[in-house]
Length: 414
Image (cartoon, rainbow, N blue to C red):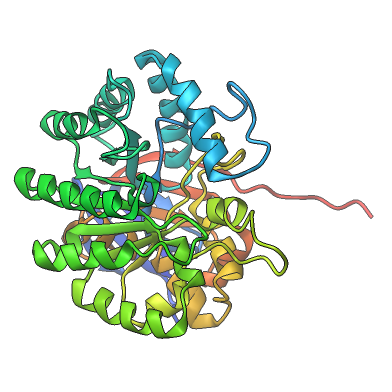
């Protein structure tokens, strides 16, 4: 007996108009195909797409909904954003963080996001945001997965006490340890910060997620250090480098060498086209850069690339809806990925590739035996999703419908 059947669905980009059913028993998918039996609950997908849940592989739940508080980032630069957030975080309370983050988590769920990796700033001596997000991780664990990365926004070596706070965060149970080498005072300090980060990851058997080369400086080359340390410490796929914007400024000769190192290291790359396209290249003269890493080159080289939405109404990015399809839509433009196969790959970058980044790919996906984490969404092909960015008609978490959205219909009177 099935507990839930999703009827009349289609896989994305399937060549025929054949429709299929998804049978769910308990928390798992038990059949994909035509199902003659009845279920306790049934959903008519109306011939629309079924996808595995979206994955948000890079967000900051501690900073969400703080744009304009205490001031707006008028320059739009990363440095001004860090300064404003530095003022705001002095006034954090657990209740403040939980209220804002809860609002955004619910927003993400309605957009079909059931897997979230959130960075949390540990530069606060009281670790206020971390304690708040650890509680929310547990509170929402029945329906969604939240991974937390201990993120030293002000640097590991350049901010007194951050080494001790990183270790405390690991003891409290964060999923990954981070670093921000380009924000350290010197290149040498940046390298040492990465060595500390990897040492802690090994000690506590956690993943690594580094803010890496989020700058327009072509001389910022910490990605090679991250890849080398991933190999040296045998962490490989458990390592992620986020942003890597400086890569768009590297010479072709250096990129050729770097690609080989990335292939050997098997590290994951997360790009954030929404925030990067606004924040990067502010200091460029015309023509201004695109502000994003070489997504297409990385993908074609076999590097695992996923897309993050990143900030939602923060000192770093004043807007944002939490819709992963919006991030994929912008990636199409700034990464020059408008080919049919390329658009299909963009959807993978917010689903299966994101799952690989979070190291949950063994239990993720639309297959019999897997957990039933499913989105039903209007459209037939990848281009439909990227072009129209529809809301999910149904969001299913571990076999239970936890969110629904009605499609907006327009009427014309002329």
